[in-house]
Structures are given as structure tokens and as C-alpha cells.
Image (tube, rainbow, N blue to C red):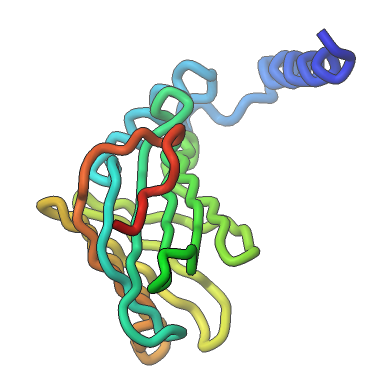
Length: 194
């Protein structure tokens, strides 16, 4: 074992031991804090988003680009089902990548809340995520023109997501995708444009 690996393992073990000391764990009344209970609560929370599993393809429109573009999404879980990854991939008319984003959805069993860590267009940020039985919503709090609220609805193999400015309601994004099958996420390559 390399010195770096030993140091990392020691740090993790010391951190785990420190977290287990009396008085240091989170308030137990607020939710589970031991790793097996936390992981199980995270897994159960990710089941609420199982309707996103698979590979999706369709069209998207954005206020920054005229016309429709081919857009794809793939979604699946990692870490034994305790987190969910979603990759969005748009293609231009020549089949080249026009947009690519990655969202990592997690659940905090102590706070009883979902969040999404997003990477897109050279930026990374965290957003609270509201989960419904047929979709989710999140808000991009800043940017040109102010905050944008994204609302997704997934029903009968169709995923529709709309982004609208909170002030004035102007639509800045809309996608309509159909589920095209399961996804080998994360090992497979991106969903192709055709």
C-alpha cells in the first residue's frame, strides 16, 4: 500500500472514529446517522426517482439557439443505489456535442431533503431538488434575466422538462424525450444522436 493510500485510509478511519465519539453525531431524532441506516435511507429515497432509469432521446429547444436540437438523457444509480446520476447530452445538426451536463442526485436522511450537484457549461453548483411522484423541480437562482425554475414531468415513457424565468415566466428551455431503453450507466458511452 502506498504512503498516499495509507494516509487517506488513516484519515478516513480517524474521521469515522471521531464521528462515533459520544456527543459528536447528529441529533438522532433528526434521522439516521450510522452508515448502514444512512445508506438504506438513501437507497429508499432514490427509488422515488426510478422512473428516470434508462436511456432517453428526443428534441429540445432553448432561448439561446434557434430551432430544435437532438437531446438525450441517461440515468441510473451508483453506490449500491444510494445516489443517482443523470447525464444530458445535446447534439448539433452534424452530430457533434452541443451541450453536455451531469447531475448527481443525493438524499440527506438527517435533513430529509434531496439535492443535485450539477456540472454544466464550465460551472458546478448545488441545488435543492423537489421530488414528486411524477417528476422533480429545481431552481437556477442566478444568471442573465434572473432565476429560472426547471420542472420535469415523467409519464408513460415520456420525459418533459421546461425551464421558465421566475420573473415574467418566459420559457428558456423545453425538452420532450421518449424512453428508448435501459441504460448501461455508467459504463456505456453516451446515448448516440441516432
